[in-house]
Image 1 (cartoon, one colour):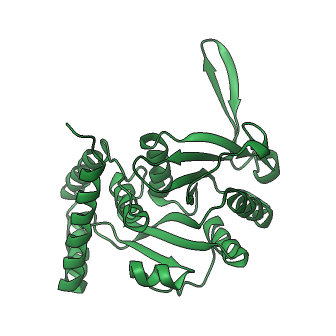
Image 2 (cartoon, helix red, strand yellow):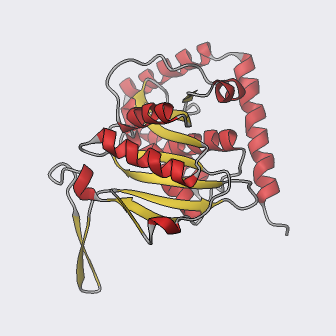
Image 3 (cartoon, rainbow, N blue to C red):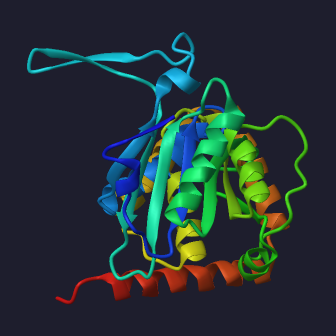
Length: 287
């Protein structure tokens, strides 16, 4: 059950809303996807509207509650999934942000509740974010693959159909639930280097946010994230330089990526980056 901050009848009226979702755990290598949602909550000043009752969906021996003490007052924070709403400055749409830990149980009920909320809020599209470990070098742009249940979105964004078969996480189940409910959905996955999988991975978070900008056609303030991504890469460079085998492996991955890249793809990437630059410039307040 979703517990709302006020009454369920008092939910805000939203403008052309899109729902963005990320879940920590199996779907989120390097915490890259959940890092994107947390960044958006911050830069868009999101307001929490509710959270799932943790008793319904979490095994507390798997995801244990945490005890904190603030000014002598002891409290417990329970694992859950939180829902917030953001109104994007100068944009013609609002965003519902969903962030939490992958549920331990009752995935069908969980996704049905989330889809029902999306329908109640008039959500036009659900975007799930994920990240996985892959044979990709840290020195190159982080690959982000996209797929959609909507053929028009796929054609506009150049997404390829997903051919994946095998175990899935909560984002896969949510995508299926959206399809059954007739809600357009998009899945974005970042591929982070498997040899440097410890979170955080700000470079992958930055890549996911770039794809969100492209999809929603809205500017995303980056704050210090670009500098953090650069510092992360410099740190991995230094670690790789200390191990000849790792350095040789990185060079091998670089050669494979560079050989596979097509000039047209590079040109498209430059064009997209220029479009993002223009969006951010238009969103900046006049000086």
